[in-house]
Length: 211
Image 1 (cartoon, rainbow, N blue to C red):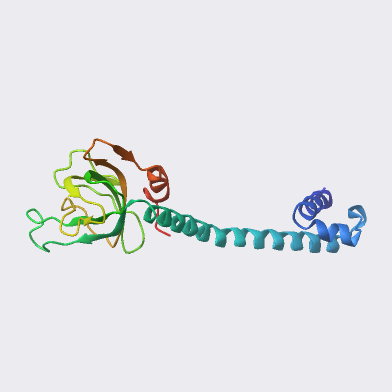
Image 2: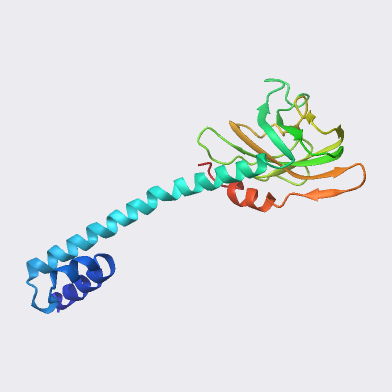
C-alpha cells in the first residue's frame, strides 16, 4: 500500500511539474524501484519549491510595477498632485497647530478651478498603513481621507497647497510617507470632473502595506 501511494505521488508530480523528465526518459512507472521513485519525487518536489519561490519573489515586483504605472498615469492628468507630505506645525501645541497632510495641486488644464477634492493615504516607518483622522472629524478614522480645497481660484499653469492642508487629530502619529491624488474638481462654469483612477488608487493603497 505504501509503495502504491508513492507510485501515485510520483506519477502526478512528474507529469504536472516535470513532464519533460518523464517523456524524455521513457520511464515505465510501474517498473521503477523504490529508490527511483524517491528520486523522482525529490526532483518534482524541488521543482515545485523553485516555482513557489519564484512566484513569491515576483509578487512584490508586480505590485510595485502596478503602483508605478498608477503614479505615472496620475501625473499625466491635466490636474494632478506634484508633491505630498506631512507638515508639523508645532511639536507641542498640536491642538492649536495640528499636523497637516499637504498636497500641491498643479493645474495644467485650460480651466479655472474653483474647488478640488484630494484623497490622502499615509504609512509609517515600517511601510504599514496609518489610520487617518482629521481634526474635528466626526466620520472616524480611515486609511484614506479626503480633503476639500474650496474656493482656491486655481488658474491654468498655477499650483496650490504649499501653505495649507488637511489638519490631523492629535491621535494620528508616526507618519513617514504620504501619497495623494486629485479625486475631483469643479470649474467656475459648473463643470465637474471625477477621476476615473480613484478606485484603482484605493485598491492599491487603502489599508495596504507600501511596497
